[in-house]
Image (cartoon, rainbow, N blue to C red; front, side, top):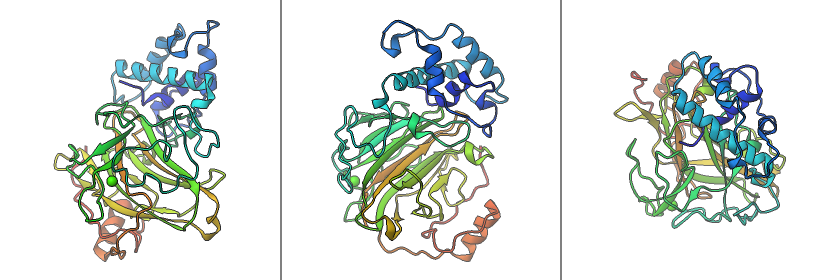
Length: 373
Ligand SMILES: [Ca+2]
């Protein structure tokens, strides 16, 4: 299994305390430090170079300090090894790093920064000249460090099994999700499931994070898109430990544009304990049906470079996955009720302790949340 737990783990190589002992612990990410420890004199490809002699010993020491490990030591070790090698490779070749606003093309991609709405319906394939892809891991802080992500759309248009950790950005045709029974593709103009979409992330564990993004010059302040989210119910109390889907809209400097994205809960992020998510009969996954959401840019962003990132994050403790489907980028959203009912607000406030938005729930009904695991 590929390491998705790894930033957390490899960060531990350079840190005195193991990140996984607490999802609240700060997790400075040090690919450079990890790579420096591992770099031998021989000029072999990074994957073929030996691991440090005490690698497994250190991993075991960190593993034994995890109060409630959610993976076996063998899984933990495999995660760490793979992530160590990934970061070592990134350190050797910086062109492999995810650079959302890069002016130079990335290896294997001929990305056009003015791609904008190109390949937005994803009907036949993912066009790697119109999308950026990347993957990494979720550190203990819960905040992915995108500069530590490896660029590329994988496997893209090749088969990508849902349960494979290597299926990070997978083109999917019409079908049904095996975990929650929703269509794999967003609606076409007739309102029926379309011929193709993309699945971001997978149903494998390991604290992985995947993203797809577009960087373009904003020609409109309104950008609609369709998404469906499937989040493995973690039962964890910490917001940063929860599987999530995040739509991050950033300006030309990479800073989040506040309030630009609203996933229907008044926020740009959905966590697995959001009371407005549906729950599958097996109570293993929280999910949304296909939903249209809209990005609203400030007028000051017109004519400027904007990056929209669709990000899935597994739980940082390593056992619970997150994935999402995306379709119809740049589509307009049909008119939908934007008023939240008093009953919805009441339930939201009772379950979350937070004030419920009055205009952002899109008529979604809070599901029963009496059984979690
Ligand atoms: Ca489609």
